[in-house]
Amino acid sequence: MTFNIGLVVNPLAGLGGSVALKGSDNVAPEALALGAVPKANVRCMQALTELAGLDVCIYAFSGDMGADCGLAVGITTKVIGEAKTQPSRATDTMLAAQALLKKGVDLLVFVGGDGTARDLLKAIGDQVPVVGIPAGVKIHSGVYGITPLAAGQVIAQLVRGELVSLRSQEVRDIDEEEFRAGRVKARYYGELQVPESHQYMQATKDGAKEGSKEIEALVLDDISAHVEELMEPGIRYIMGSGSTVAAIMNYLDLKNTLLGVDVIEDGQVVASDVTAQQLLALCRHHSAQLFITLIGGQGHVLGRGNQQLSAELIKHLGLTNIHIVATKTKLKGLNGRPLLVDSGDPTLDQELAGLVPVICGFHDVVLYPLGNP
Image (cartoon, rainbow, N blue to C red; front, side):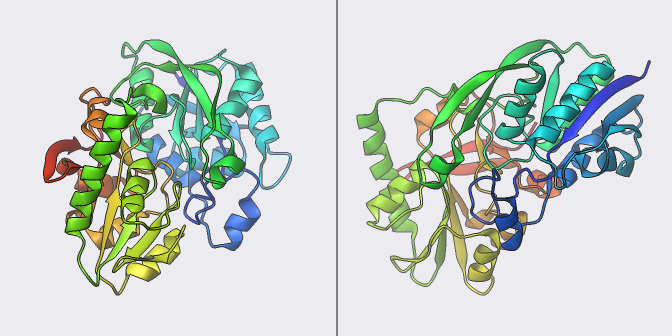
């Protein structure tokens, strides 16, 4: 029996990430002008390759809203409509979702970020199970696979008829204008029905319960002191986004872009809120290292809110020049789940897997598993 999948791709999802625009809402022309390259369709095809050889039919709007991806990987694909505007907009996403619901698809697969999840929730609610393929800059919702490949594996489980329960997962989104100003204001919008597969589906960011702020502050000072001791003259240090790295920058008395990426050298900021291409230019002919933290509750260290850290940059740096910093409270909040990477290059993600050192205090380093299930 053929398993019918409805596919909706937001082709501009994640467009602003690599060029430090911290989102894609209403900034597509600016992002393209800065050299951003759309990757949503590539990530979609990475997921769909997991369905090779299975009895599947994809229903989608034409072109880069889904049909191109299904055809490119050799899956039977039927076009049921087209976007009203080019490039497509949120209204096209909602129209596609409504059309697919009328087709009676068994599962709706969508590619995007939190804004795309909101659009689907608004258009069809929880009337059909969904699986999200992550392609956005900010992904706080629990409706996405931890990587495109993981999303594809969940879909394949359903197609094969394996016993996969459904559960309600939150759709959350933040105000991008506030986000670009360095303030995170997340809001709950509702819930969608998703397959329950803990090893493949993303947790919501609010899943971790942090310890007391006073103790946290002391630990962050200890982490910062350890990082300062590691720093050497003449090396450029890429300081990733997040509050833990911000605490290090504050300890060093340096200006920090909380939700962006900065570069420092010899105790000075040499570049602030950089793009992916700027980072490559800054590091191509210099010794460089990266300090990065994880997203609490989720465990992602790459691919969520820091697309400036491109696969090309990670390959250039090498794993030995990447330092992960986190409090033990943050690690415990993962409940034993591994750290996750979603660099956009599945081969690189596999190469990064293994036990990695995590700086948790002054001269306090623990080994923790990194690698997607």
